[in-house]
Image (tube, rainbow, N blue to C red):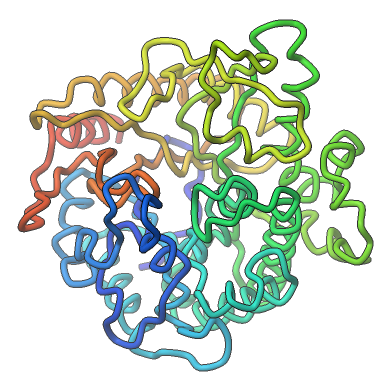
Length: 447
């Protein structure tokens, strides 16, 4: 059985994971090193000094994890494919053992009545490509299209809903401007160059996959609302919006980078970077769009009394700001405001006209017990916001919780837990939390 994008008659539910965060088996079956394997070895790169070499060991425990998805009554499982597991050098040789693993994963999901949706890139760039320049160079975009074709050729008979990139803003700007994510480069405008090649890689891959018959091809963005804290911060908020949101939506909808963005990011006006035809490939290339949402942003002009948010350096060229974070907050320090999701979904529908999936939403809370009522409150509020956006006319088809399992949370290491299932750090035993059981009941009542 294969299923296409939900039709929107009811709100579909699912759970999401990402390869580097859960799979482990980093050196098994021919997998090559990724930029996260390399970055996590740097002293101080992750809060606890740990990496994803074992993670949740889902490479070996995927059947157990899919049982958990089924037990939650979720119809959808969003996973990502590890590029270095498929093409260890980033280009050229294909590792069939890696493809075999995803074969098994997809078949096991379908056997449980779960619809698999595959994300092709969730930040684990093969280190070999980074060694040749990474996302700031054009070769990486071209290599991504080749890789996408290889994966689709193996899985496309069963997987019908595809996403090219997950949160390319993080890959570009946290990785190449702020340096807080892999590969850890702090090179300012290199983030803009990386952003263009991520757009181009999506466009090249989308053309290949559409030609191969894919009809449900999307891209997943962590779009964000920017609510200026003072009138004086309005211009800065517009610049932040340009780098966070319009750098992606402009090419996708209009085939162009707008003038406000180009003032902040003059690199994107360079004809040797943005070549004729590049943005034509991106325009109209998505059949749906994924929205990941966690928190709104309240910029104020740089205030020495406020702590500078670590993401400020991820907006190269924008007016320096501080971010005001109101209460309540999650354990990772993010403000909780479900209205931001409702507004974002309505605005994204108006801007793109595309079907929308909430592809990630969830919260990190300290799990001193399995009775995570704070997470239940967060999920309840945000599912409610999703339903209100649908009532307001936004074509939102599904809500996918982040995340199934407590896992490797990137630069936070294992210090922040987003899972609705607890994973014991010593023996990796999975134990559903109260939020898991709440979601299972909520989904069952929604069918």
